[in-house]
Image (cartoon, rainbow, N blue to C red; front, side, top):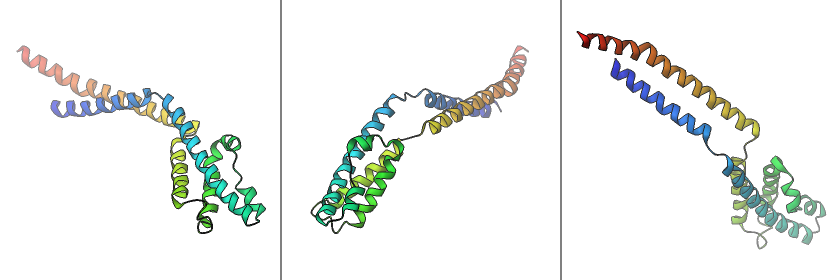
Length: 168
């Protein structure tokens, strides 16, 4: 009984340590990674957008040329809608991939898609981050209480019985 209880308690302590690390993890690096990911995505968008725009101008399609017009300043100000805009640009460029040969490679289109995916993965809304911290805090509280209950209700009485039996 005691050996099983100690094993369970060790598992709870390991989980508590893991949750504590999660809660204390430094978040500063995430902002830097988010900016770097955003800037890489913008560079890909501008490159692909310029190629599609050149094609549109050469083929006398002012509507398409305007739709794919990419200015870094405007893209930086899009905030959370940047990934959505990158997706639309990728759709437009992919639909005209054959026509764009010589202006842009398939690798550049794949790079745009990959950078969009990477940006989406790193961008977490403040609400999601707060919800995650609350979940970790709740789990931490639950696990600490469970460990304390285990010690108080199982180990303490068992140790008292062992102590009394050794006195005799």
